[in-house]
Image: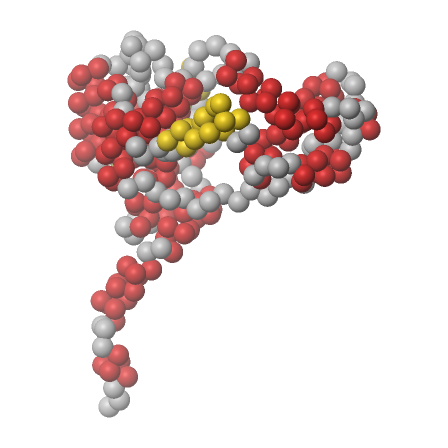
Length: 302
């Protein structure tokens, strides 16, 4: 585990785990004790869930070492975390992100906003998967970053993820201009850093730097530790959200949007139903245009 990963764990131990559970006999810790402990944590639900996850990882090791029979965190009722509705980035925000992004990934911002590719699919895209003549790209691989070792190409995450995505003119031109300026890596990767794959952590750093530099994102103090700050702002996934929301709000079939994203239709509707509902004014206008706005014409008799 990297030093940056250890710091949050050490803080959770020092502030929230050891003071309450440090003296508790390991073998006597039960699920109800964990639930009561989590409920009393002076944290937001999302932060409480992260601390419980840290405790669960520690106790999983104790199970493996046969110090306890079962992990009391497993199956414990943790605070419900309601995911906020997706608020898509505006085109102006995306322009600012692209302008602030490092030169070698500037076109990547346009590509995700215009195709909805996942982060791994974006940085696993190779030249041979792009058909400039037909203006489409094939998604059948992703760049996967293991816990140890370099990032490698791997199959996509699910059957739905295998797909062909049509490219708009602006995305086609962005890809062509990028390849003309930077060229592919030795292995054919479209986006890379001096020939090296852009791993998950590198992609996160590039996105957060662009977010802060553009003013669309910011750094905020870490709860319970004012000496540290975390990034709060758009990531590559938010560009994917923009693509889906843009298409759905313009009346594109949810089935086609799901196909472009590599989603199943149920997941798409669960994630973006509010985007479709927010387009009620457009629905009203379409109905009035179709039926006619004058109710007298419809209710006239004879």
